[in-house]
Every structure is written in structure tokens, then in C-alpha cells.
Length: 169
Image (cartoon, rainbow, N blue to C red):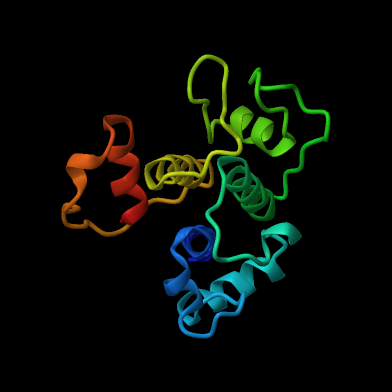
């Protein structure tokens, strides 16, 4: 059950950082997350999963690099395993971020091709689903429910279909 809660927390964080302003802010116009995400985000902050720089600005999208940081922090919180700051470089020519390197080493992420990672690119739903699914597999978390087909499944890349359904279960 605890494993599922941690995964729900990181998914809530991702959703709260990537959904348009009116949904996150509601009518308040503040930088607080909306009510549906607030408790999960507060729990994740208390657990040390959310870096300080991601504890505000809920209006903006999250980058691939930032998502790696959340994923690595979640993995560390769950397993207790830590990694040194000088971990071997993943070989990306456009990124040497430690969280990206750790996520790559653990098999959570891969690049976008040509030894590139695109760290500042906003993460897409399907990229997040793949990374989130890889994190869940590392933590031995399995979905428990069969879900109906997504109405926009035809828009999914082939490499993302199975992970999207896996993390939705």
C-alpha cells in the first residue's frame, strides 16, 4: 500500500506541474496547488521528494530533467539508496545533470536520440508514463486494475502504449 501511495504522490506532482493554470489555480490566482493535488504534494514535500525549486510555480509545465529529479528523489526515499554526485555520465551531449545520469543508470530514462536528452524540453504525457512505469518496475509496484481504452490511444507512440496503460492501472 505504501508503494502505491508514493507513486500516487509523484503522479499528483507531475499532474499539478503540467496542467493548465485554470485547473491548478482554480479561481484563486495564487501559486498554491488546487485542492485535488494539495494533500499529495504536501506529503511529497514532507517526505523530501520535491526539491525546493519545484515547490511553487504550479502553473508551468515540468521539464524532462525536473521529472528525473522527482523520480530519483522518489526512488531514494523508497529504497534508501543514495548515489554520489560524481556518478558516471550517461553520455548525453546536452546534459550532465546528476539526477538525469542516475535515472539513466537505473533504467528509468533514455535519451531522445543522437546522444541527446533534451533536459529543458517539457515532458509529454507519454514520456512521463514511460519514466513513471520504469520507476514503478524498479520499486516492484504493479497496477491492480484493468482500465478501459483511452479515447486518444491513436495519438500514443507505440513505445508508450504499454507504459501508459500500466501506470493508469
